[in-house]
Length: 500
Image (cartoon, rainbow, N blue to C red; front, side, top):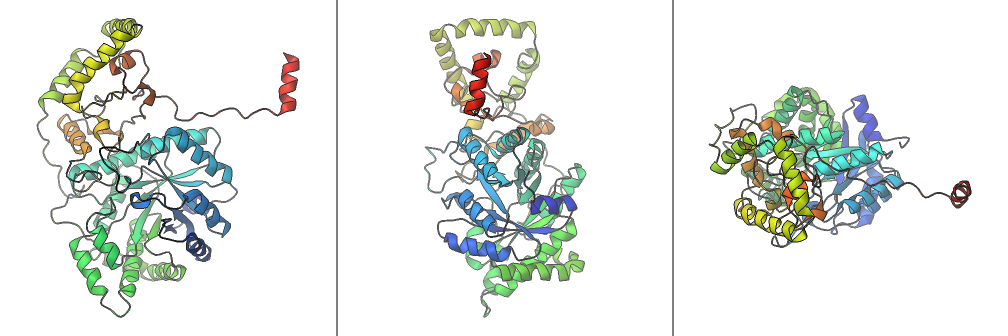
């Protein structure tokens, strides 16, 4: 373990602290980021600079290179590690590089869908954020040192979106996340809601609240839910526009708002503030000092910074909507699963089917015919893409491959009012998962971790893979990492040969 990690140390002590986001986009010169890091290293309370990767779905500077330079200038980096366009080997290699460099802090996220990418040719997300955190935990168990943060967005205003963010957060914590960072939002009621959810579930994981120093251009962009996961209400947008008419273009007003948000977070019991939108050290220092000065009056600012849509869903303020009736297909499949329990139980029927599938598997033509028959049924019913690792039973009969990001453990943070981040006029598939689980009274089962698919099984029969234990599914998951023994020095290898 590295000798010092200010993030870990501050959170262990229970000391309210600050992290400042450095957006490593191509539009920002690296020299500017490095100077900002150097200046921030002298601001008391700032424990890390969080270096983005693929922010907003656009390519940027290499976050590992930037993070290494940031550290050389006296600031501890927190490196965003995203799943965009990377397979497991790529992600493991990146994490091994970080470990070799002695960089401990990683922010494990699925990542925004690449801007301008044709949705008919989706980017392959080999892992989602939960699976990435599981990979990092396996690397830690193998001796590498990481301190892992994850994302959560309480700023969701439909029941399925909101509830699933919290369910997925629990998955991330169970997978090994050390602390959480909220996505961007301006709603104290939602900040309070998330903290209450954590407390009532007995979750002690520290949380950083996102505090964004909001100028007009960013507010206008966020008001359109761009980039995904960010949102500004029409009321706040209008207020920011009015503030911008001042001689200072609204700078004083937005710094004051940021300081008040920090004070609210401190009062609610958050572990720290994640400051974005401005990495100027003098302004960050002002926000911190001002927030400390007004901290005793934090409750006065809660209502002021509560921008939410009218009629928006709040987890503890309204009863859940009555469950929708379960559809014919899930109801029928539920009944068949109860009559013929073969997936998880070693019944005589299961043993018979295993023998049958083993016999078919030895005959390639038959195995291929079975796969085509399976696809002919499942594709029109579920949108099946023949991944060979079927988890329809764990996902309420919704195929994860119909998600443009192939998420298997819950929605990404980019959903907006139940609609998909990538295809905005298409409902997010996880809304249907949630509604079917609610109808079947099995919301708790949505906390089940679903491992990444075995990609080598693409185009093969999931029935054969299931009964011959080849697929990756809950209860039958392979390790995500491949740790090879270090090569022996030549002298040691020679001694072993002599012994033999």
